[in-house]
Amino acid sequence: MPETYNFATVQFASHEARGERLNVGLAILNGERLDLRLTRSLEKVRAISHDVDIELIKSCFNQLNDIYVEYLPRSVSPEEALELAIIESAFLKGISSVFHAGNTEAYSQQISFLMERIIDVEPAPSKITPKKATPLRSALKDAFRREGVLAKRGEGISDHKVVPRYKIADGLEADFILKNGRIHVVESADFIATEGSLRRSVANVAVSALVFEQARMSFGNLGMVGRLVYRASAAIEASIQPALSAAEHQGAVLFNWENKEQRFNFLNEVFDAAHANFVKHQKSLPFHTSSLDKREIN
Image (cartoon, rainbow, N blue to C red; front, top):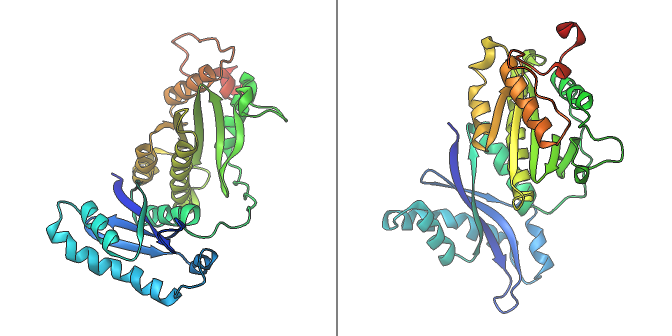
């Protein structure tokens, strides 16, 4: 089961009267332990003041843990102890929020994502590396195309079509996205095609969890429905459950493409959301015919 971690941004202010602040680090509560992460680009504080001592800022930041440990026994919660520690320090508290992670690798990935997004100096726009094609992703694309809901060249989410490879943030893209009243995000994980590199596939699911979280942050006012479609044999499904649970904890609904009933339910949901001319098939048909190879339905 994924754990919930509270965090706060730590800000540097040059002078109270100027009202200028910069995020310089993260303070993450890992149980009762305080995990401090300082920006790698601390020189950015010179953008608001040249009268600063970078080494002093580093020292003060590291002292946050000592102050926190002093307040912890006297506080009603670790969150309160962190609040008091930042107040007493030379810094200011920025935003507070939470993230979820099911294992150490996911925890590190979430922190790296937060550091890149809200703490470190924003890099130049990066080119998204195309995801490696998998049989599952191709099958999904073919199913959407056959149903007439896949976006054509020049069409976007405003056309209420399923758009492949949609940029959620710099370096982060959703496999498929549909805007139709709500935002529908579809991520895929093909554990059968990549069974020889299971660890990499599990890491990809952790990235999918970040996609769902970022989509929720970006489209919060519209509401986000996340769906993770995966392809896995019964032999490996138990071993990937922790990774799947992490995505599920982000609100994603899971569908195993190898399960005909789940495949049918997934396609029905997406087709209906896209307002496609989808005709319900007889209950005796356990899957939608357009999603299968012609040899399976003839």
